[in-house]
Amino acid sequence: MRTVDVLVIGAGQAGLSAAYHLQRRGLRPAPTTDRDLDDQVSTPHTASDRGLTYQVLDSEEGPGGAWRHRWRSLRMATVNGISELPGMAVPEVDPEEPSARFITGYFGDYEEELGLAIVRPVRVSRVSRADEDPHGRLIVETSAGTWSTRALINATGTWTKPFWPIYPGQETFGGRQLHVADYVAAEEFRDQHVAVVGGGISAVQLLDEISLVTSTSWFTRREPVWRDTPFDARAGHDAVAMVEERVAKGLPPLSVVSVTGLLWTPSLLEAKARGALDRRPMFTQILPEGVRLVDGDVLPVDVILWATGFRAALDHLAPLRLRGSGGGIVMEGTRVAEEPRVHLVGYGPSSSTIGANRAGRAAVSDLVRFLDDG
Ligand code: FAD
Image: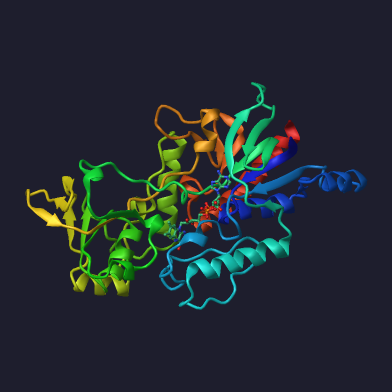
């Protein structure tokens, strides 16, 4: 079993920010091979690092986190805006470049330049307590063996946990159903009628591009909320505060768009003008040939694209029983209120690139104090 003081799970924006701050605080890579163990014994610790170690485990084959999987047509011009990683400016952006390629390159350069301790591909399957001692160790089981750690920064994002709602008749559908996590490009739907379900940013962006090549219908449970004021720093602050309040009460975090609203862009205004954003209330049933509308009519549909969001990827933490009666995890900042060894970054109020950066710093600062006390 490998031992470490702080284990970070996930190397997207949140995990990289945490790794950067751990390294700045003087934590060194944990030995991952027997050769490293020998080197560590022969290398004296500097006063600043107090001998503490960290390691990042990431299930991807290479850098980029979830950005590696964003659909091809999501370009730097169409993302909402990317916040730079701590300590390295975002290189000059070609607005036409796919975000998957650009960000994978940026993250890769970052990891290399800073020499961050990341092991890939390693999937964490289970985190449990070694014993009931609140300052005891956590046992982390992975696809590459077991780790024992004093503290954990969980930065696993949401991409690996797409949310598919359950609708009557879903299993009888004769066409194709997919989630936005599986979307590649609009071209694959040419000459088919596509029903897009969901009221978020992905739904409207994909309706925009799919409606340029084929016919679409848009279904949402509630009337979509469009913003009529710009999304400025103040609005961002208010949105984050709203989610913070929820997770401090142990309620599950809300989707981003439910607190920010949908923003009109020139492209979406064009989509609106061609009728692609005429929303229908959610259908009542899925049939082999289509969907039943609220008025009882049947709309023939070839494809149902579920743009229904994602949930926090926390299944591996289930043995810790962190969820409370509100269905969420009671948080104090990035720290789990009931388990001070565990921080969640990129969760709830920090699930944006800027929020992930801040959460990484906050988690490290809290954990270094915790480790010093322990
Ligand atoms: P991720 O980037 O998802 O990284 C998590 C990492 O953890 C991944 O590498 C994953 O493989 C790994 N992992 C997961 N589970 C395990 C496990 N069990 N074991 C080991 N490793 C694991 N935000 C913005 O600020 N601006 C935008 O323009 C923007 N656009 C977006 C567009 C889309 C389509 C979506 C879905 C989200 C967008 N977001 C945007 C939100 C964005 O996802 C976050 O801002 C941020 O990139 C998430 O970073 P993260 O580090 O939390 O997660």
